[in-house]
Length: 371
Image (cartoon, rainbow, N blue to C red; front, side, top):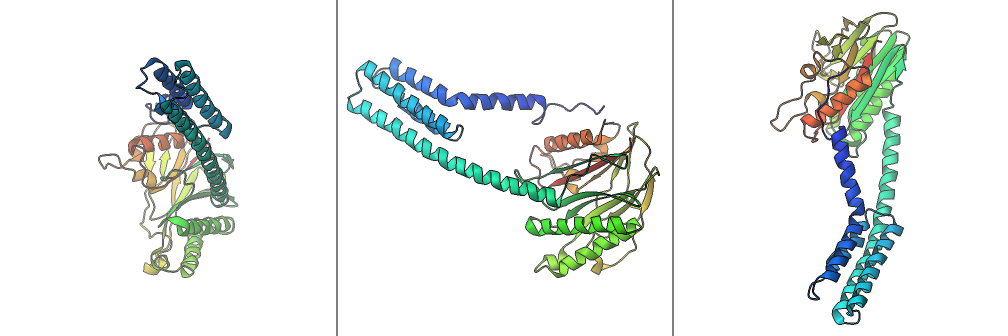
């Protein structure tokens, strides 16, 4: 089992606090009506609960459906009128002004509700499109491939963002299960386009090339072709750090080609951890014009029960409030996890807690376990 995770924003205690807060907010309009009515009825005439009754439908507008918002406004107006009749001030100027004020707020609340709901509908449509784009460009791999347990996770630094310049892909091939995790330089649609190029080239090359080194060469050429079609800075400085892995069929080894990317980690069943550093440093993909070195795959034992973790620098460069980096090797050493998904969930939780929820870079995680 993995080490226990202290309560945090994503823990049970954090979710319980969020649940209580949401419940309180949902009943807040009713509480405002009750408080305003009691204040209006129990205090002298110079004091008024109108502001509380006015606030009730306005607070309800973004929380409730149109029917609930209108009902809240009607209840606020009726409660105020009933109290004024009871106090015999319904026809006085101050009383009429209060009723008109609350009624006006109720009408405005209904208008606000309609506007908010239309905005929510547009946002939901945008989110659906973004999710579809993510599934198309960065599909979730199958949970089990050639007897291996697989899990992938993408954590966007920007809230409500779905995909950026980080990438992962898993492909079964005649030579074994091949994987890639990479990080495209830059942001925005240009980075997303480069992600699509890299993943498309990887899937094709993984099926056709006999060696992992040849797969890396295909990715290099694909990015070079993409660079010639770009305008501006990216045409000259665009690059992608990447690490490629190959797990041959029937062999308890893994082969690694690293192109300027953070090294993978190998977590054994007994908690032993190894950092699979590149034997020879190599330039990132897309920087072939600066020099070419032949890729050489590094072969390492991949025993049963071990988990291979590939990640982008959004994990290893996450900083806390003192500027200290999150060190995945130090954090995971001596720990075991029942499945790859549990490992990735723990990492995502710990990184967000380490950075105080203020991640500055996207994070792609890919874990493969040999049962």
